[in-house]
Length: 555
Image (cartoon, rainbow, N blue to C red; front, side, top):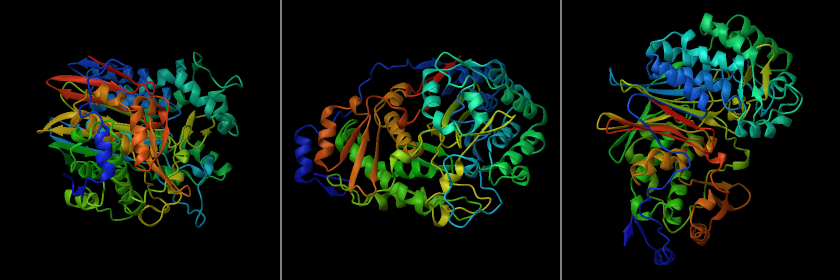
């Protein structure tokens, strides 16, 4: 018996004999959140108020781009820990009328003011802030592919910031967890702890200063953020606190339209965000997985989880060695996403033994911030958008008088060399990967997730859940997840699992293969917060992640 060029050993036969291959097909299961079905338009986001904002725009005649921009601005208000106009992101768009797929890079970038040689960027404080891209990116998407004005789509966000919204248990937990980190910034504290104590579930969260900033942007467009009053406020706060960003940095920021990363998986077209983010890693991983019969290995088997770990280890070699800002370095996207390249990398995988070298990532240092939203409209236009502040509450810095919470994206340069190393004005690498899936020239799915280094593993798991195991979108999102990392200095490869959702035998079999297993109790925020929509047989099927406050609305 031979599987992908690696002969089955005695150890693997033992696993097979005791049922180590797991369930061959995922069974249709009841879900925590019911799958939403509609026929006209749909919005999936990490907060119900953001989803509602987007749905209202669709119902008012807006297209998918109008709706996703409204959702993104609103989500920056109601999920302020994960995203906002002080942050950045990436959007992937498919316009059915022109049969065109494109992407817009609104990643933050370093200041043009040169930093100290070898500087290590802090996780909190002004020094770690990069030039925000959110306003420029959303405005570009709207101008080029939307039908409504910026004032129309930003109005729901203004209302939410001014009138406030009820704090959920999830947001209350994030505020509590980040309270100490936020304490040095008195203005941020006035937002998340207006009475001196952190806001709790059921309290009302308001940010009237942010409403004023959003009104200015609605009136003046991107210049309302990158020039004039807001830019002066950001630059002054930076200067007073040893930050690098000045008015020139803000005035020169531009979002960039780029050709998406593209590939195929078992007859489906994968369209994702290109360099300097992680779409190519997803495609490279799927290309490797395509060599294997995942149905045979089984959904919950140790062998399948081991295979995924080996695949992701090889993909992330390229994240560290090759990926960088394409305006600064040559990133060979076509080669990285080719089948031949992936097949060559997969050839060294053994199903009965671990590779000794894994990516050197300590998961405890990896934040799980970021957020995602997906939209489909009545005309078949499809959008996937992921945006972030990097860590929860970014740099734990808010600009006085503006209500704007700033990112800590400069930390993404730490430890990077070569193509991904810091340079003035450069965009930093991350793994965000908003993704569209097509089948036979028609849209099949839009999806994405937060989760730092877990983004690519989570996305690959969701896509294989949909395609290989035939799950519905909500079932695919709720299915248990894994992540594997090599803990530097500990000499042991750790398989992290939503353990109580897997059979107990899976962990035991992984231990036989040599893994140290770290088990999480049920679905955990650490493994991401996927939002997605599947288009099938003229219907829209929406899924939202119970690991967050996800919500899908359709009509």
